[in-house]
Length: 271
Ligand code: DGL
Image (cartoon, rainbow, N blue to C red; front, top):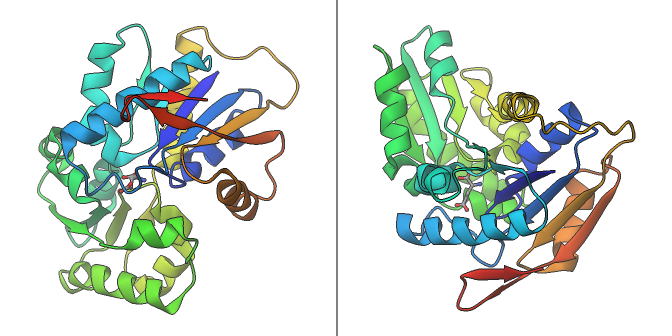
């Protein structure tokens, strides 16, 4: 079983791709909506939350964990691998590599949360793949909250996007890396603002492929022939989350939406 988590609904942009590519793999997803957004919390706090979420998913039977959150990956990927050495973790990182390979202008824009840019993961990405390109990190205050409240097509959200993308367009970026898993749900609005001037890169399909490779390599791939079933938990409002899931992914079958609660001062989750 694949465990997937995010601070909220953003990781569903990765989860839906996993379900599409690996239809026989059962999944358990946790949206930590009691603590969304992660992006303005410190590294240590996000690391502690990610550890609690990981323990919950392992308790639910997860054999591989997909950290469908750039912020939690930046804060906790190396830590979680050290803490749970027997468990394979698939992390998210901004897709700097393909963006640098594809840029013609030599300028790449990356939009993500402040915590994602602070992590050693982002600096190591720049060192490994930045090459001669100018890679511009850009934070977009308010966007995660806009997605969480499903304000995907509002004038207010489009204004936020215009403001955060303007410096990238002015700098001549021709590639836009979506470095936060919430942002793919704004893709229509982003494409409208960008108007063909930047190519938009969403790493979700590559992360789902990597998850399939990890399962196969570890001998964990499901042998079932039926479409799998999925349990989606939230530490926030269960009914609101169920409505969100139905709205964002009306076509996915076999889904049960359930509540989960943090206990012991946010160190343990009870399902
Ligand atoms: N979806 C997350 C990410 O990819 C986290 C956003 C947040 O909670 O701030 O970074």
